[in-house]
Amino acid sequence: MGTLSVRESKTAQLKMSTVGNSTNIFWQESPVGKLERQKLLNQKGCVVWITGLSGSGKSTLACSLSRELYTRGKLSYILDGDNLRHGLNKDLGFKADDRTENIRRVGEVAKLFADAGLICIASLISPYRKDRDACRAMLPDANFVEVFMNMPLELCEARDSKGLYKLARAGKIKGFTGIDDPYEPPLKCEIEIQQKDGDCPTPGAMAGEVVSYLEEKGYLQDH
Ligand SMILES: Nc1ncnc2c1ncn2[C@@H]1O[C@H](COP(=O)(O)OS(=O)(=O)O)[C@@H](OP(=O)(O)O)[C@H]1O
Ligand SMILES: Nc1ncnc2c1ncn2[C@@H]1O[C@H](COP(=O)(O)OP(=O)(O)O)[C@@H](O)[C@H]1O
Image (tube, rainbow, N blue to C red; front, top):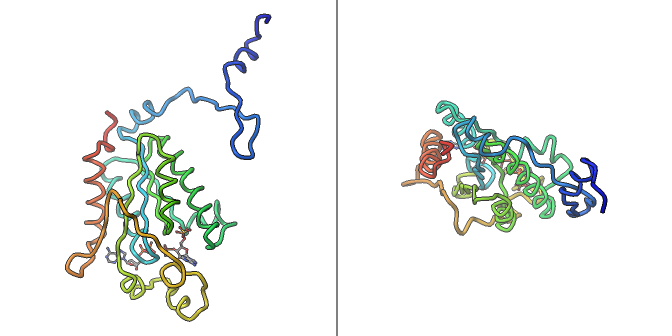
């Protein structure tokens, strides 16, 4: 074989792949790697995945956690299920397959944010265990922190801050999680938030529990 041109030799070094329906694709390495990005940010990229019923406090925790990290000079980004359904996932409904695809897409985006060196806070009902476990498997080095908002349905329904439980009970929303659609609680998660003596921890206390875990596991420093 003659001497390959730079392009050909470069191409020869690149491995052609087929992934799903994408054929003849090549992985392009970035000149700046994850360790360099983490050094710049003085933190380690990871995904904090918050799961629970509608009204269990996922968004409240996501916001208080993001704020607490910011006050400590740490960069995070929230991927909220409701919000992403206004854009990236606006083509998806709430049937089981659509929820699975929703979680898969958010998992892939969260993986990119973590690779960027951010603390990615994903807050979605994510009712199916297999879908959450598939997201966990996407993350290299197990940088996946599952937080279960273990609040009783009665509390979530009493809150009903969006009036959706009332609509679901009236049969105006079909397939509403917890009412006539399943939620599979985690069998093993990193953090479980629940009531103590019938009282909910404050948003600050919830955030503090997660920050302490991240600190203990070394995510709030790059070395
Ligand atoms: N049928 C049904 N079941 C559950 N939730 C519903 C439904 N229809 C609309 N909503 C609103 O959508 C929000 C949940 O979206 P997610 O992307 O987190 O759901 S999932 O993870 O795909 O199950 C959820 O937001 P949160 O209340 O913040 O959980 C609801 O506001
Ligand atoms: N720890 C908490 N203490 C008191 N109220 C809370 C707490 N967490 C959430 N709430 C309230 O419960 C309602 C639902 O919270 P939200 O974060 O929107 O839940 P989700 O994102 O799971 O649907 C809101 O009115 C919120 O203010």
